Length: 272
Image (cartoon, helix red, strand yellow):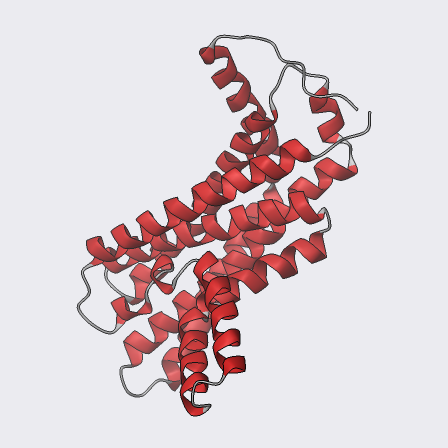
């Protein structure tokens, strides 16, 4: 195997190369099927909203919009994760990495291009969210939820990128990404359960050790403040402050995931 050919090129040329690679990778994802899936999912979401609207009695509007938002959250998140992992898996299958090794490209350019692809794909997926949420709530809440969901799916997509680069198998990468995502979503509940377990066991060594291990694991995953907040549908919430906290947390974890992706990708050997 051999490394990428290192050629000193102006920064503008490296930028142009990265953008060209991004466009190439993006064309592999964009298709008429993607548009159809997004439209079908949007219509399905509206039907789900109408169904729950007939069932809700108390705080019907808030409950319906919260259920619709969560349906969009998990549905679009899973779809984005499958799209990203499938795209990278095809690069493995068709030996795209081996061809890249023969070009004057750095490995970091591939990672940056993939990050741009993930960000663009997530943006395309959440555009209908603004319309759907605004139908059930006001446009400010719809704008917040679309922005917050974009950050959330972006983080999940980067986690999927790391998983597929490391594990190289779509089922393993999807399961790992979803496990970490759900662990992060349930981090508050898990922390409360562990604290209560330690209290009920009178602080036994085993309980404290388990609490320490899970505490260390939860420390490495995003906190609940990283994800879109359903409280915006039930009360007066400062939307700017809420999205600012989520943005800051997402940036930190996104940079961490990109750095790990770079380390993992550079250590790989590809046979020519």
